[in-house]
Length: 159
Image (tube, rainbow, N blue to C red):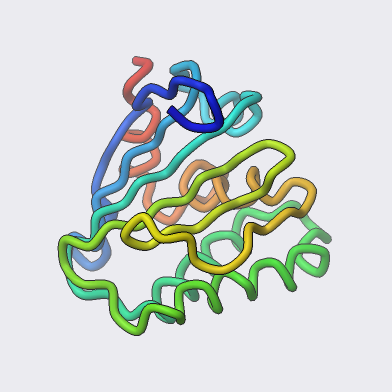
């Protein structure tokens, strides 16, 4: 339950890089869909849950998210989102290390912004910028996702 809406797991998978498991991830939304564009555009709250599979530097994770977002922003939009993207790095730098097994999540709430949590503790202020929730989802579901197999798995629950 998020923002008084019952969410269902749409899919889950593991982010891999150079053959190593980085984090497990699950994607929750109000209605299952196998279509990435539809998942991003679907009204209502969405949630991304993560479990670290190895020790991750908080700043490194924030920078990786920033880079994934930049790759999927529409042409000419980076300047608009740049101040907000920088906030992601600051948020994750509050945690020098994310340990193996540690959880973090992103709540995407319409009209209330993007909320970042580490171990269920809100980190930083919610980011409230038009289209930012969609830009965050683009990291994993966009046209150039950080991991193609992970994207497919996050959308598999509706298949």
